Length: 188
Image (cartoon, rainbow, N blue to C red):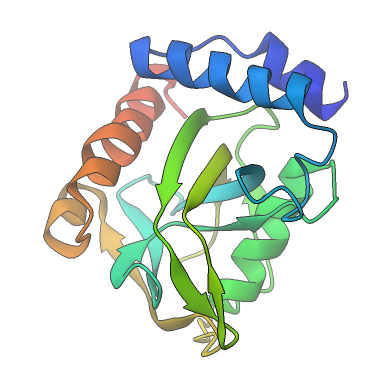
């Protein structure tokens, strides 16, 4: 199944995902460069929500742009295998050598605002990330390495303490809490 079909076939979890899926599909239908940052309004990103084996912890990075502990992920940059992008970004941002998908299906869809910021000494205007998320698993005993280009920390955080570490209340409530509920319901 191609990436557009996987998004089209995804069953939204709640009202937020119903609305965000509609917006993501509208952008896919409207723009032919949605998989690249050439689209300065909105573009596809792929994220990994990395849990340990017993699902009690989430691996987070301290993201320098957002000044907060956050999940891993990045721009598709033309790669239409979004699960591959999520795993690649997870490895790059944490130093992990082995990261596995818990399932190959999409975990969640979110439209996320990105405020204007400086990256590589250039200003990047505010835009939308059309986030396609996957549930990934890693061994919490494996070595972690900070990717100093984008982050200043990487650590396992107890799932029930994310709100104490993440400075983005909207992300905790709308994204992480949703994922945690979904993981429990699916018994993953």
